[in-house]
Length: 477
Image 1 (spheres, rainbow, N blue to C red):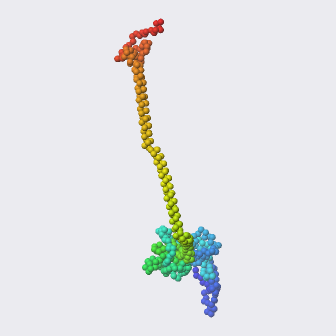
Image 2: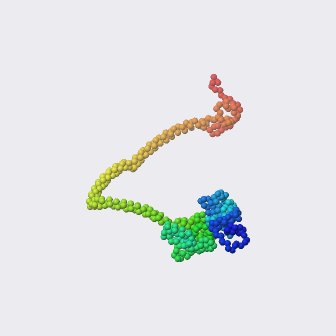
Image 3: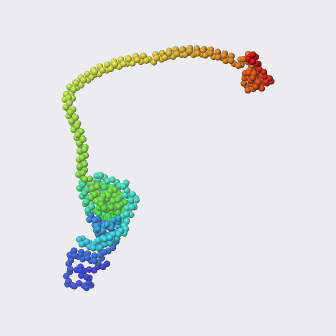
């Protein structure tokens, strides 16, 4: 869009100005207001697309930022009444957005800007996308792992700082460091901290402190990489992959203090420690001198009071010993102790003799008791009793055997007399039926068909033809 306007406020004209007309002189305020009116009247409301940078949120609720693309940038302001639309939106540096608003001029500073009315996200900006991609790759390799981060020395003696020697960051760092703890030596390696090629200079600083400085006798305890805050573009050299790998490979523990608290770079994530600001880095690496002196005083008291108390106690003890009779009259004390020793020796001898007499009497009583309970005498008595009992048992056993033998003979004679075979030897016989049972009467024989008669020397078998039986004496009468 081509804009033609007359600073005096007259409409454009193709005629050349009068040769002798006096120039119109405007104040800065008047000029700025004319520019503002021209921009608001000729352009006014517009829609523009770009990437957010240098985002700042004020306590009042207003938000100020820069909208940029590859070739230019413009300031923007989003007032507190319009920020409700940002709820749920990722509104931060690097985000690509489409804005609706009014183009105007901020008269106080003489800059043109957009008063934003509406915001729509369009995606992540190119630099932010590169940042996130590199962050993911290095995280996957383990360069951000807490296990590889090294502890910092508690009391460093020499610190190497890589930064711009003319920047505010090094002044803040040195002021805080020397105010808190004097005596720390600081070596500064000058390097650019912004713009193309700054990452290579910073890498060279890391190499110098790691390789060349020890050869010169400068053994560095801690490295500090620092600069002030800025936009994502200003800090981009600290997001270069080559610098991140150099920081990770540094043999010296490294602290990254780049930007302000809200600024984060890849170097912050790879370093052994990230400090939010240069001043905070100085506070972390130093110890407050007054605090150290106070602690040393406390240690001195904690160590000195017990020793002093112990010494006083020993002095009092020695003083009490010095006032005793042993130190004042040693000969008298020695004589008294010798007399006491003599008395104790006499008492000991008398007590020993009395004790020996008692023990002798007790031993004699025990000896007599043992004699009475002599096992040989007891065994002799038991043996005699056993012999007497054995003789009595033998005599009783013999008498019992004789008595039972006589009784057995009588029983044998009776048994022999009652034996049925004995009657057969005297001429008697025994008649048996067919079933082998003894027949006791002639009536029983009539019922049998075959008889067996047993003699003492054999048997005769017979059959019954006729059976008669003798009448009983009662039948004859």
